[in-house]
Structure formats: structure tokens, C-alpha cells
Length: 251
Ligand code: IPE
Ligand code: IPE
Ligand code: MG
View (cartoon, protein in one colour):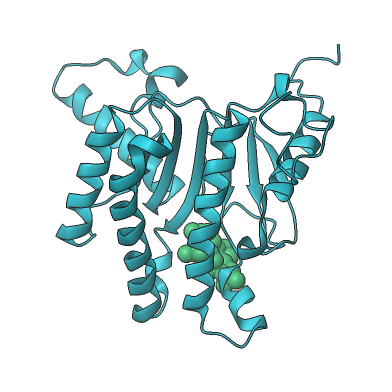
């Protein structure tokens, strides 16, 4: 019958496979609280969280979602204790090393959104390698937001366009919404239809500020390390009940 008959998380007849969002974005939040509840160091939550990301990226590929954007590390997360930042960077390194090994088989392309220049030269080299490999892969695109801030992204785009104007290459009038999008990290990626934030926080925390203009939001209390295929199904099912009017009137 279908790919999903053997998947116990699939709620038969509920996810409408003909109306899947093309692009889902997730703020992977709650790792620290998950660890604290278990008397573990926060870093233990990040380790499990990284596994959950692998699982959810695979599930998006199975479902047929084209783009998955995840918030892994914000421009504000540098405020955290050095050992926590180090653990997160170590997990990213591990993930990239693994992705390099398995990308051809897994068919999960990677792209990084964010200012990568403060990362270690080793991490930057791995990003370059995964980017180059990803160009050869035809599959779901996972965008990993790393040292990413929505405001930072918009400022960078504005500066880049201003530089082109100052050089006489562009005129201010040429800047349309679509043209501006081409200066963002997300250039070429459609806006997310669905943005999910687990862990009970009801805020964007500087995530995809330009791209979220008409996104549907889904908030739930599940902490990211407990997030499962069933949680994603529930978010998609909820999204599919929404009446997206885009400023128009109900059909
Ligand atoms: C999200 O989990 C991961 C990152 C921000 C890197 P948190 O570490 O924010 O977990 P909580 O919100 O403290 O529980
Ligand atoms: C947002 O979560 C960033 C990531 C999930 C990477 P935070 O935990 O940093 O956000 P706040 O501090 O609760 O707003
Ligand atoms: Mg948090």
C-alpha cells in the first residue's frame, strides 16, 4: 500500500499526504530542561537532541517534505557557558562527519544558514565539504541555522544591497520583496508554511523573521529530546486544519 503502513507513528488517514507543507521549520528547544528533569547535565540533553534531529530529518524525507530548517544555535547562544557551547559545536562536528559518510545513501542535503566565520577553521572546513557534497544530492534539504539570527540575516542582506547601490550596480527601486529574499541565507528556499516550537515557549527568539510573514505556527509542550514522528504528525495535522487566507477572504 504505502510507505507509511509500517510506521507506527503514522496516524492513518489523518496526515493528508496531498497537502503536506513543502517547508517545515523547527526551533529545537528544551534540551536543557529535559536533562535537568533527569538530574543530568544540560549537555546530555543536547546529545539526545542531536539524535532527534537525525530522526526527524529522516522522517521528513519519508513524508516528502522538501525543506526542513532547524534552529541549532542562535547569535545569542554564545552567552551560554563555554563548556555547553563547546559540546554543541562538538555535536555539530560529529553530525557533519557522519553526514559526509552517509549523505549519498541518506539523501539528506545540508545547507547552513548563519555567519559561520566565528566557528573553528575545522568546523568551517567541514561545512564547506558538506555544502559541496550536498550539491550532488537530490533529496530533502535540511537547513541548519548555526550562529543564526533573523535580524542579523536581514542586516546582512540590507548591507549587501546597499554596497551594490553604492557601487552603481543597483538602483534602490530594484529592491522588491523577491529581490530582497535573494540576499538572505534562505535564497532560493520557499518560505516555511509551518514553524514548530516545542518546549512550551511561545516566541520566535530571532528565528526566520523575514520568512515567517505568513507561516502557520505550532507550539507544543513536548521538550525537543522527546519530540517524535508522532509529534510532527500532530503538528502537520493541525496545520492542515488551518484556513490560510493571506489577507484575502474565506473561500
Ligand atoms: C535548545 O535547547 C538548544 C539550543 C538552544 C542550542 P535549550 O538548551 O535552549 O534547552 P532549554 O530551553 O534550556 O530547556
Ligand atoms: C532558541 O532557543 C535557539 C535555538 C533553539 C537554537 P533559546 O533557548 O536560545 O531561546 P530563548 O532564550 O528561550 O528565547
Ligand atoms: Mg531554550
